[in-house]
Length: 580
Image (tube, rainbow, N blue to C red; front, top):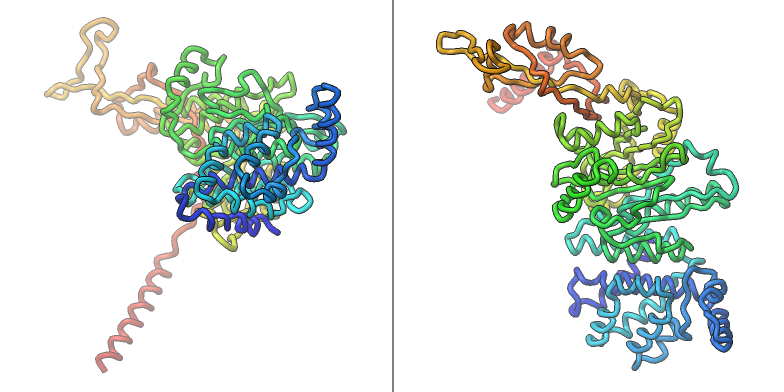
C-alpha cells in the first residue's frame, strides 16, 4: 500500500468524526491515533518478552527500564499487558483502559501524546460516544514496520498534515518539504564528503532548526545508511508547532535516535542547542514569516552579544525572518580547525537582493561572502512547494571549502529541471525527477560552467563580484543669479554647499575604482558634481536571474512587415467575401 492510499484509508476515520468535530479539528484525533498505532505495531513482536522481563525484574526489585529497552530493541517500551487489539475486547471500559495503556509507555512517548493534547481528545470522544469506534478503526490498520517502512510512514504523516493544513487554511509548507527537494539538498551536502562518509564506524551530527515532522533529518539518515550502513548520523532538531514536534519525536524514537536531541520551542527566542556545533545542517524555514513576536529577544541578543551571539552581522526587516535562520545556522558551524561544517537552506528570492548597501540584509550577505562561506546557490523551478508557487533557492554554505572553490561562488539555474506531476498537491504542480537531481548534483560536484544550448545553467563567480559601493553624488546649491553658494563657517567655509534636491546615488562594482567610474559616468553629464566620501557604503546583492538572462534579438522589420501584410491581406479577402 503506498503512502497516499494509506493516508486516504486513515482519512476515512473523518467520516466518524463528522458532526461532533469541525473539519479543522480532525487532525487532533487522527494524528495522535496514527502515531499510537505505529508505536503499538513497532512493539508488537517483542511485547511478550518485555512483559516477562518486567515481571522478572519487579520480583528482584531492580530498575527494569534498561532491561526492557534491550528486550524491545527500541529506545522506548510499554509495560501494559494491553495493546490496541486487546483494548477492543472491553468496549465498556475503553477510556480507562486506553489511559492505562498510554501511561505504561516510556516518558518520552508520554510527552509525545501530551504535545498532541491527546488525553483531552480521548475524553471528548468518550463523551460523544465515538471513542470505541475510532480506536477500533485504527486497531485494524496494519502499520507494522514489515508492512510500512519508516520512510513510508514519514510520508504518511506528511500527507495527513498537508490535508489538515489545507482544510484549516493553514500553511502546509511550514510543516514539511517535498522529498525530492530534500534528496537534492542531501546529495549536495554530502557529495564532497563521500570518501570520508564511506569509512567504517564514522559518526556525524546533523541539525535542523525548523525540523517540522523530521523529513529532512530522515532523508539524510537514509542517504547515509544506503551509502555506508556502518556510518552513524546523530540527529538534532527544534520545532515550534506542537503536532509537528510530536510526530518528529515519534519518528526519531522509532529510528533509535536520542529524542532528547529534538527540542520543542522557538529557535530564535529559546535556542534548544545553545552551545552545540554540528557537522551538517539542513533547513527549509517558513518563507517570508515576520519575527515581530520575538523581536525584543533578537534585538537584545544582537545589541548585547554582537558577533559573540548569533545575529552579529545584522538584522533583516521584521517582515521576513529567513536570513535570521541563515545566521542561526552559521553560528552552529564547527570551527574549520575542528573539521568545519556544511549546510543547505531553502530561501525565497528576497534574501538574494532585498535591502540596499548598509541595510541588515546587505550586511548579512556581506558577512557571508567576505568570509567565503557561500559555495553555491541553486535556483529551483516555480510551483515546487505545497503552499506557494514562488521561485525558491537552495543555498549551500561551508567553512571548509575545497581549495578549488575558495573565493568562488557557483550559481546553478535549475528552473528548467522539472516534470509535471500527475496530480497537483496544493500549489505543488512540478517535481524533480531522479535524473534532474542527478544532473544538478553532477553540475555542483564537477564545479564547472555549463550551458543548455545557448542558455547558461551553471556559472562561477568571484565572491567580490557581488559587492558594490553606493556613492553619494552631490551637486551645488545656486542662488537666484545662478552663482554657487559657498559655506561661511567651520570646515565648510569657502566650499560649495550641496543641494539636497539634486543629490543622487550610484552603485559602483567593487572591481572598479570609484574615481574611474565617476569620471566616466558622472562628470560628462554633471561637471560641477562631487562625491561625498563620508556617505559611501559597501553593499552586496546576488542578482541571480540577471546572470542567466540571454538576450534574444527582435525579429527583423522586414519579417514583421511581411507578417502584417499577410494578416491584412487575409482580412481584406474575408471582407471582400462578405460584401460579395
